[in-house]
Length: 431
Image (cartoon, rainbow, N blue to C red; front, side, top):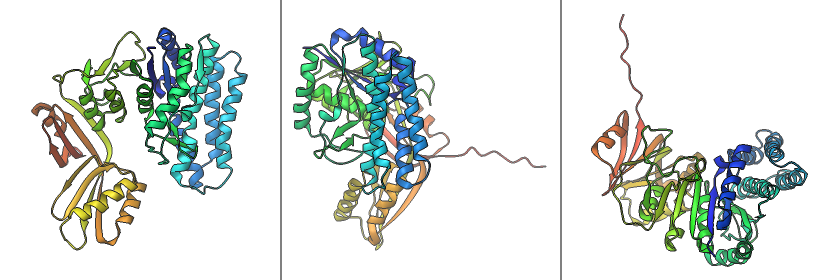
């Protein structure tokens, strides 16, 4: 049986109009047996992160934050569903899970509590969507993704246990698909062997949809976005960006690896393994195919620019000024893995090793502490990482304007630069 996997992000379901638009798209493609993955309401993940931090640190009024979140979801549900008493009870019962946690003092790691609390956003949005679809006569059924997607117990960045996940996904979802049901499920979340909730990393709903596409042998996967497709740059930062009508899997993997936000970086590989085409489509124009990512021949592409803000450089050197040798690098990389510090770019010299990474002060502080007395670590903050795929001289010079380049690396089709923006100096007027 042919079926497709749809994924809608938080921007698609940020308000009543968004829910109605998603429902219209689902109705339009109802005959194609869609499995629908939905993220938390827009900004809900941020709000839940604030709740976790407020409770875990004891700073701020956690109850007020939780009540505000509950009211937001209740208001949307009430505006969508004429007789909303059942879904309002569901919302309350779901949020009670957070109540149970915050009644006690934290005894486990922050990352553990993060996953138990932040995952609630996806549970809420999908319960509202399923109830709304049923209320307008569509054969929707809510499925808990944690019953299908099994992971290790690495909180906030869980790794998929593929054999178990494929078996459980087929068992749970295929009978519903064969019955003509529209499955509504969550992105971003899974379950450990101890049945604790895990998450797949921020923006991980794309990855969830790819996992389900792989396990269910989907005909195609569709990510519905607030942009026309995959663009040559972020339209919030650049004018005259172009939509790329087609991309190869290889090019999409490269773009997402270097930080392009339109697709989660882990999304492409499961699809490529089974040659499942991916469409990145605009939710405000369902007729448009957007960008097709598939096993096409390599094409010629215009320059594609990706800017990663909030970067830092970690300069690591041995205190005895000895060469940074293989055994040093081995211990450094073990610590980077332990603290989930992603290496976006790196360079080593005889006596130092420098990496560019996302600036998360808490992680970096723990990393520096564990480096111990054998190493010295100096951090440069407030940097950007600029990647230009298929660069030319004109684009390169434009991106260097008013920027100090601290590290640069060129490959055949790609240039990366760690830069610091230079304030434009104005000449003083002399009396």
